[in-house]
Image 1 (cartoon, helix red, strand yellow):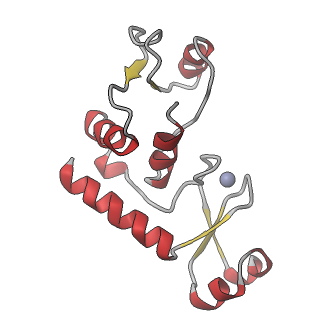
Image 2 (image 1 turned 90 degrees about the horizontal axis):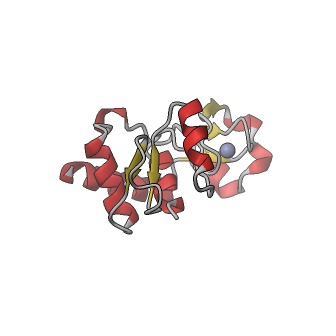
Length: 140
Ligand SMILES: [Zn+2]
């Protein structure tokens, strides 16, 4: 239910795991020392659960950043959006074959996910995201 929020958190560089499980998620969260963010009303009253009232992902993100005081922990471009792994800076000559030629020519800073091998760079999409995050931070 909170897939979009999960991606937004990762874009901000905040460690966010995702699961579709119901009650079983509580055990897993306890083991991994995580807080469960949910819209599932059946989990609402549990101790390690933070219930999201709004369905809007951006509002959810704002809420979490202020509630858990994460503003200073935000580090865009540091975590894989797909699998939550920490990104590693990579020399562009090493990933030349994994990216479009235009991108190779116009960008110098690249990061690689050691898990899914996805390559990230600070293109227009990144700049737009950064603008959104800054906008959000002014409001929280
Ligand atoms: Zn990845």
